[in-house]
Image (cartoon, rainbow, N blue to C red; front, side, top):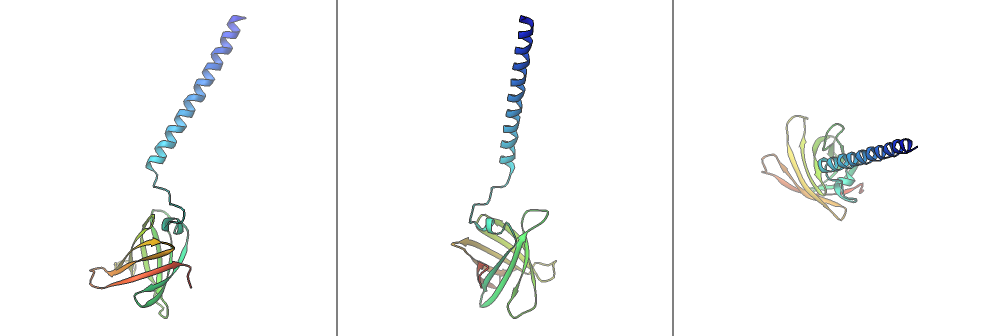
Length: 148
């Protein structure tokens, strides 16, 4: 009888040890993933807003514009385009967002960078400066999500 109890006790201890080991591995794996994962977007941040396809409208200098942005499919960052109301040209955009800060480059032909966007998001408004690649021309921009 004692040999049977000893075997049962040994089986119980081994199963508890196995469960404990698996739990430790799961916690360690989660901690490693959290340490290497990019920071989560803050709710209401620009990064949160742009985590799905988004339309922004507003001004670039004196011109009324509309931007369409979406997360890149296979890598970090954003892609999209914009146009000036009353003009047919679509200008390509690619860039990155970090919480409430935006940096993008634009291209008229999909190869050569023709301008840069740097802005920040505050109180529902994305504003900043657009400039030519050499910085010789700058214009302020101000955009709202889905604004008319």
